[in-house]
Structure formats: structure tokens, C-alpha cells
Image (cartoon, rainbow, N blue to C red):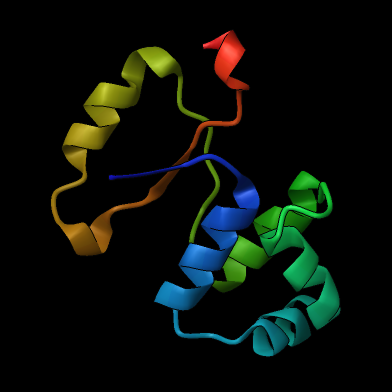
Length: 95
């Protein structure tokens, strides 16, 4: 299971795993490559709808999982190829 701190890093890892270039992803999403770069570098705070569109192109789904169910959900993911990315978006001091 991957625990990634930011949506930008999750997008980069997912895009690379999907073997798609930033330019190709941007074109399919109707945005610019420079914006994809900025998202991956966490230089911008994209709208959820933008992230959803980008991940959808990569054949991933964004879901919200209650913390109380995280261990159960992680246990359901059987193989490394099926593993998703869990974002921990709360600052350290709020955990």
C-alpha cells in the first residue's frame, strides 16, 4: 500500500505507472502540460473536478474512505498491481 502525502505526488506516481507522458495526459484532459507539471510539483491547488478528470483518464478513481475503515480497505487490496494510493492530506500536527 502506498501512502502519499499530496495529490500531486499521487498523480505523478499514477501517471508514471500508467506509462503516459505529462503532455499526453494534459491533451486528453483538455489542459496544458505546464498545469499538469504544476499539479505534480504541488505548485498549485487544483480543483477536485480537475484531479478527478486526470485520475479518470489514468483509469483510477478518487474515493473518500472513513479512517475507521482504512485498515479493512487496505486488507482487501490483494496484490501490488492492484494497490492504490492513499493520500494523507492532514498536516502532521492534526493527526
